[in-house]
Structures are given as structure tokens and as C-alpha cells.
Image (cartoon, rainbow, N blue to C red; front, side):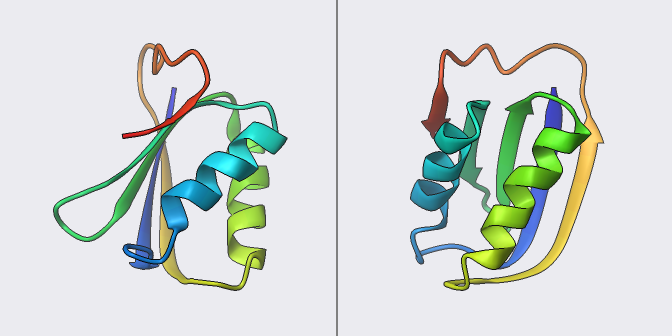
Length: 86
């Protein structure tokens, strides 16, 4: 599983719904959720190429500002059947 953290103007702007739509377009499974520190977390079952494809679509969407992203590998999977908004 990949854990992606996104910092920027990403809360209250439709970011999670857009992330879910792009994930469906890319046939990805996982989840997206707002964190208490103002970041967004994406849990993704996939590889680095999948993560970069999703981030590329999000950055080019133009409706929000992404200041920083980080991608870390975590053991296991998200156990999601599709791509969920949490």
C-alpha cells in the first residue's frame, strides 16, 4: 500500500470527490480522507506509477493548490473494494 499526503489548499474545495473520480478513471483502489492537520491522505493499492498518475491528474485539474506531496510505502493493503471517500 502507498500512503500519499498532500498539503495545500485541498480541504473544502471538492478535492476528495475529484480524487475519487480520477481514481475510478485509473481503475485504482483505496481511499481518500481529510486529516485533522489540514492535509489530505490517500491510501492507494498500487505502485509508484499509479500514485504519480493520480497526482498528475490532481495537479493538472486546476481547481486547487497543491504545495507538497509525499509518498511512502506501508505494509498491507487498504482492503478497499473500490475507491472510497472516508
